[in-house]
Structure formats: C-alpha cells, structure tokens
Length: 330
Image (cartoon, rainbow, N blue to C red; front, side, top):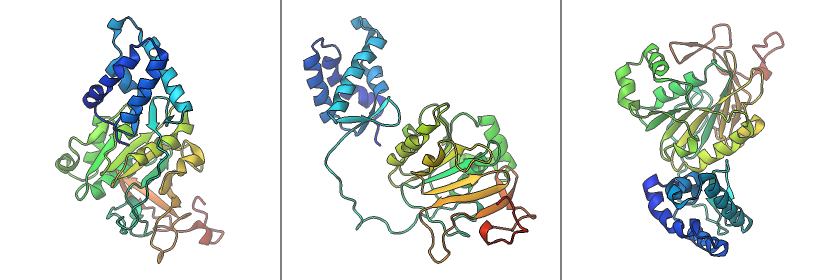
C-alpha cells in the first residue's frame, strides 16, 4: 500500500474541488470517476479527502460533505472501480488487469532474521520478505517481552521500528530496557527515534522495507476486523516484515480475531503462562521437520530474557511425543 503524504495528497486532490462544489450530480460523478482513474496511488483514505477539500466557507457542513462524498463512493463501488478495505475510511482502486509474479528474479533465500526462543535456530523456521509473524499472548504474559527481545536480536544488523498502540509508555519502555542488561545508550543508538506511539492503524505507519514490531493490534469491540488489518499491513510491505502482537484470552486457542487472525500470518506463536506454542509455520528447514504443535516452557527474567523452565523439558518439544505421566500444559 502506498499512501502519499498530506501535502502531496492535497495538491493532487485539488482536481477534486469541481466535484465537491458542483451541484450537478451527473457532472460530479463523471469528474470523480476521472479523478479515480488519474489518482497515482492504489489506496486512499476518505479522511485525506475531507482534510484536503472540505471548506466551511462554502457554507457546507462537514457531515453534509461526508454524506455527499459517501454517495459518490457507493456509486463507484457499484461500478467496481473501488472497494472498501479494512474500514469504511480506507478504499482501494480496483484493477481488472492481473500482475505477473516475477518468480525468476525473486529472492530464494530466507532473511537473516533471528527470532526469540531459538525459533530460527532450534526449529529451523524461515522468514521471507513480506512475512507476518503473529504473537498472540495472554495479558502481561510476555507479548511485549517477545517484541523487545526481537528488537535486541536484530536491531544491530537490520532497520527495526517499534510501534506501540499506547499500552507501552516511554517510562515503562525505559524501565524494561534498563532491566534487560543492554545499555540504554545501545537502545538509543539503534532504536532512538524509531519507537513510535501510534493512534491509527498500523498499516499507515509500517516501513515497507524494515522490521516492524507492532505492539499490539486490537480493534476494541470489533475483533473480527483484525484479519483485515493484518492483511492491510502485509500489503504495505515490500522487502520488510511485520511482527504483530495480539491479545489472547486465557486458554483460548487463538488471539482476538479467532482463527481468522491466523490467515495472513506466516508464523503464528501463542504465549500463555510460561508456555509458548507454534500454531503455524509456513516455511521451515525440511531437514529439521515441521515445528507446528511444539511447545517451550520458559521463565521470563530481566525484562525480556526467555530462559528454559528448569522444571520443563529444557527446550522445544512435541507434547504428543511425551509419555502420559508428563503433561506440561499439553
């Protein structure tokens, strides 16, 4: 997804003014269709149009402006020139021309990315461009710790960005970083200016060619939108990846959004009280075998250090391979 900045949007949307302030609906529809055809980006937000073009001095209220704009959007939706995406505010221009996948020039090697709990080494999980890693965890049981551990493992070799949805304040983040044993100056060197508190969908913020840590994705009373939100993030990636934390109810199999939250992920990890599980892994070293279903019992110390629980199995294991007297949270 390629959303232009507000200044560039306003300059282009100037062509839209005759539509907005033209009382003739027929002429307006024609101009709107022309605007959609000429708009240089695939996706656009209705709020961008409102900010750029609503002018109260014309005597039209903002609700009236939005109402007339909605009429045009519905008309174009029926003509299948545009379609709403994850919310009513986000729309996409539709093209009936297919684009070939350039498999010949595509990279064949996984990205040199490290994943906490030894998931990349011990389990042989592979990560590729545009991959989504989902981490669904019970509240206060390790989601943010996993994110910071991911940052620590990769920020020295890769461009890493940490986006917080408001749950992690600067004070709390500093405390977690200081307790990690990694000098605060090191965090500042690699993540300074790249820890962002966001109050808008993550797909508007993620960097297409970076490692994006999204902590955490939620939709309030509309968790069914999470799958579409994850899809929107994936579409905004080019050579980068996103690690998306999801809230999970205790003893639930999936994070909020249910089984659909797994659809657009390439790796899906759940975290309960001291137990991490692999729910999905699309790419892995075939010589090691599939990691799906394996578990890891851990203790969390020093901010985000995951250590094997001495009362557990000492690493990743398949609970189905254990004798009955061992249950370890199976």
